[in-house]
Structure formats: C-alpha cells, structure tokens
Amino acid sequence: MEAGEATIRGIDWDEMRVALVSVPAGTDFGPLLKGHPNDLCPCPHWGYVIKGRLKIQSDEGEETLRAGDVFYLAAGHTGVAEEDTEFLEVSPPDKHQAFVDMAHRNLEAQAPA
Image (cartoon, rainbow, N blue to C red; front, top):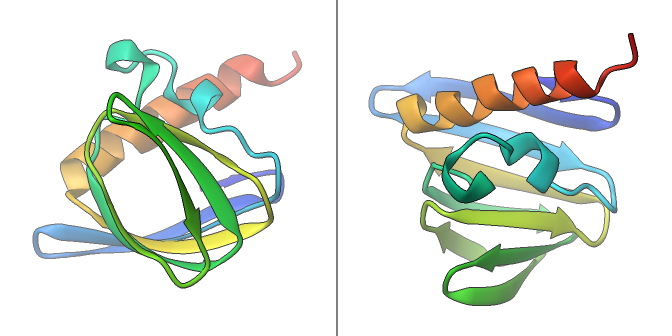
C-alpha cells in the first residue's frame, strides 16, 4: 500500500502478517481509521521502531515510541509520526487486513475528483 511518501510492505506467514511501514513526519493515522470502532485501529501490533518517533494515543493514555523501541499496541489506538519513521510490525492478518481495507476506502474518499 502506498499513499504519497507513506508505504506499507508486508507478507503473511501462517497466522501472522509482517509489515515494514515507512511514513513521513506529520503522518496522522487518524484519517485512515475513520469507520472503525471509535475511529481507532482494530488490530493489535507487536513491533520494533527502526528509525524516527511515533506518538501513540489509546484509552490507556499516550506514549512515544522511538528508534530502538520494541512495542506492543493493543487494538484501540491511533498515532502520529513526529519524525520520518520506519517500523516493523507483526499483526494478525485478518485484523490487519480490516485496517488496510478501510484505509484504502478512506484514501479514495479523500482523493480529489
């Protein structure tokens, strides 16, 4: 999936999807999540931040993930890239695909006619 400078490249292995995500500074995941429950990500993720910084918001509060951090994000989160950021994430394929499908619909709705 590509949207401007943002990319998600991944592969499914058995019961997991492994994705490499690259987003420019200022990327707000919120608009991609519109339509999910509470407009938050429906998918849990385990991962590693390769470079950059992400500010994550969830019902449990706010946290900042930085290069070198290993993380777990429960379903029900959103985030903003505070710097150009790359991270590796592992997710259940069906739940991750629900995010990808909704993100595609939201990007199409935002595209100029």
